[in-house]
Length: 261
Ligand code: GLP
Image 1 (cartoon, rainbow, N blue to C red):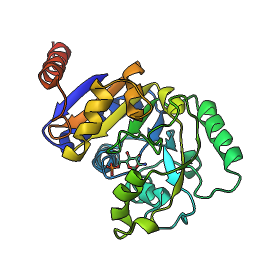
Image 2: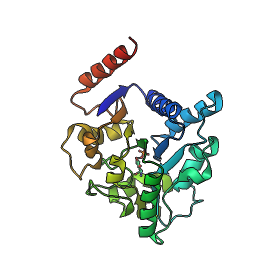
Image 3: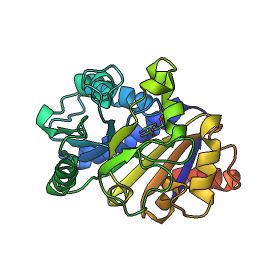
Image 4: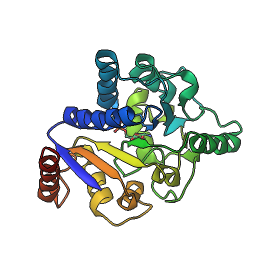
């Protein structure tokens, strides 16, 4: 894991967007794994700016979203379909047939999940997977206790996740869909690179457990310790429970020094 600590989430978004831009310039048919939640919004803004102001071309990009609520209309303001259109897809030139978001119904979900996994393989696998993290260490909607080898499937959300997401449903926990379809942890682990983003103190405990704690299904993000190319981009608040902050900062400073030589 490479740990990059920055003063604010703007710098995190800038670094993440540059990683994606550089990969896209090297490989125009890049396959991106995308996340929702408040954390990656600044990253999407930065990528949209690169598209509008510098002509960054997404025309051959394929995307796969991590997850979607089940039993919520696609047009619902809080569906992840709506989120992605609003924050990213409506502003860049990714063709609609290359955008993949898990379905929003429980209908034939087993066949859907198998087809979703097959589509990822057909696209050549995910090159860069963007991830946020839940306050309990979940990634996508792979809740605590998820098999670390899990694949795309339908899941029931934990009380913790329902409570955390109630803010988007008028603070009414009963309005939050109880189930979702999520890419599996095994699926995420096959991405060539993972970018895990987190900001604010509410994520500091999850980040400390994921980065420095034991690998356990009770902290799904901890499996990323075994991923060969994961970059953890966090602000000072999200880093506040890490033991080795100074070491991570020194390592990153040395990396930049080497790059500028
Ligand atoms: C939800 C999403 C996750 C996201 C998490 C944190 O559970 N399924 O993909 O990482 O929320 O969201 P936020 O970035 O808003 O804190």
